[in-house]
Length: 64
Image (cartoon, one colour):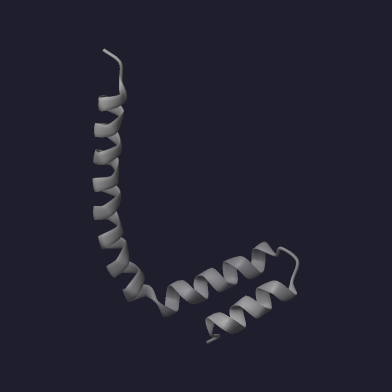
């Protein structure tokens, strides 16, 4: 399994390569599956809160 540094070097050595991007994505998702799931749960809470804040701001800024 490659380190982030190795993945970065491999990516920089190539012109944009969608196959390389997919390969690295799968590798990272496999290696950090549990961490991604844990962070995704926290991120989902933040996204919901952010939506609420933006909706409240939009209502405040709306002219009557």
